[in-house]
Length: 424
Image (cartoon, rainbow, N blue to C red; front, side, top):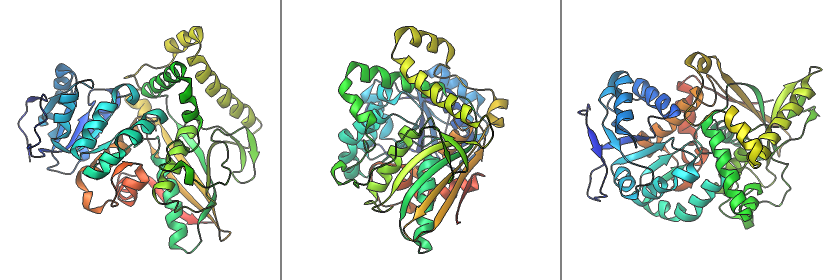
């Protein structure tokens, strides 16, 4: 179905409105929003009813002229992230909304509230523990009652982690290998730039914790996103941020993975939302592989030192000023040539209670934080908008594994992602 081009201003929340759109892209004019919109214009199934939304009418109009095919005629919706009435009206008009507007703790709370209220499915790119914890506390019960699937972290944070572990669990279950025990994600290859949006989320987290030090306990809690903290397994979890070490299991030197602290919380939430199906002895960590060469330990130490310096520097005014001048700003990103040259490959090594080892692989071409992320987010959003009858029967604040599961895995395979599992 083709819509007539036009500007629609969301100013009311009339509950009698029919769902005009399968999907609304909110934050369509940002860097990742443009990549997402372009992908949808090229690859969304014919007839998918999509609208583009953001706060700037002129930028939306400019984007519309840039998009190929049906994208040029998608309706445009003007709605500010701080206008609750506009967000309520927006959410009431779509089956699903996908948002790239971060930092989400600053700009995302109102949209989640509107989606939970209206029974509208929602997907985002957040990697912010405090944001996810707050929407769980504020909106999980309401979303369950309205049937809304609120799905966080549908990009490189944290789909490879979450789906990689889910694939390992399903392979072990289907082949009679028992439940998962010690499980490690290994980043085998990653080429791409830092996201300006991710850096801005780091800034926001540092500032919020500095203003309210009690929140540091949530950020540091390995089970911060659990739906029932008191019933988490008592088995000691490995540290989320790995130390530099030689690993015989991985083969060579390992060190920290910049996203591990957040991804591990999402995976543990997935386990808990499935009634701890991965197993009573399940533990999980994430590391980066630096190989076996003589310089490998130096590279690993350098990665750890850089991560530490970035986090500490965000909280120290003179260092913050230097970082702000050198790190990418929100809305900035690599060139098309650089995005296409990127890639990632992760492996999940899962031991099982039968003594077997399952290895899953998730990978794709394209810069993981931009090119590959736009595909993961788009396919997540299309799953919510079009595949509702095939998705797991859950609602509330969910994770990619628990909300989208095998439906998303199938979509990503069709989009040329690697997603395999085998027994060693």
